[in-house]
Length: 275
Ligand SMILES: NC(=O)c1ccc[n+]([C@@H]2O[C@H](COP(=O)([O-])OP(=O)(O)OC[C@H]3O[C@@H](n4cnc5c(N)ncnc54)[C@H](OP(=O)(O)O)[C@@H]3O)[C@@H](O)[C@H]2O)c1
Image (cartoon, rainbow, N blue to C red; front, side, top):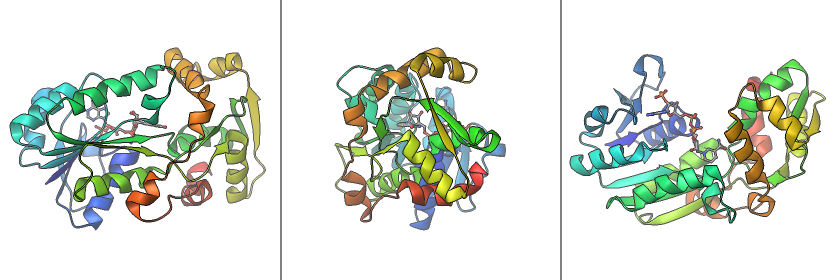
């Protein structure tokens, strides 16, 4: 049995679906089973990483697990996992861990990684960069409302990755031998600036879209209604690591045996979400 935590999330939902396609026995953990809308064939269990008393039941009979990172909530999961006989854990972490200059997002994930590597369990760590899904969250409402995307005008390029490719790597790490003790940097196949991604979305949607570059101050003000200030500051600080953000990792293609999806492919699949 394989347990997927964060199973209703961008990555976790894909992990569940892809494991089922491979014929695996899957249990999906969610805090709200009534709203989870998970596919037939998966066992759904109520569990919350913030409520350790829910975890032994979720972990019963589980050999391998996909772990969604919740800050300060990993220790309870790992303790319960040791008790119930879990063998392998595949952790969703973040590429920011490896940025030379310390940043809050990297520090947070480094703490979770440390707990996992110290746990005594067999582990694999996935360090994705920015998810393509972020653009659905942040950009789609602006595109629908105005056709103008307002973002940092720093010209930084990133290598966003399709969540379904992160999941494909997770599935290989959960099902195949040879991934224990390995840490994988996961990126998309190409470095793109924000205006380049907006142009691709315009092509896919058949609409004229515009990118408006903001200063850090303007960006903070624009985001303040929706995102806590420390998170915005962390995002701005991370983009100062522009060389690392533009790095393309060979790991996804090596691990899943095909090229990871391009931004245009992802955008075509999610076009309705921008309309
Ligand atoms: N976005 C990026 O660019 C990026 C880049 C690198 C790394 N990451 C990492 O990836 C994470 C986001 O992954 P995602 O997009 O797949 O997640 P997501 O869509 O934000 O969903 C996460 C799921 O986790 C569950 N969850 C939240 N708190 C929980 C808790 N206390 N206990 C158990 N389950 C809980 C929720 O499901 P229920 O409500 O059903 O319980 C939620 O649907 C980030 O937090 C970060 O650590 C993100």
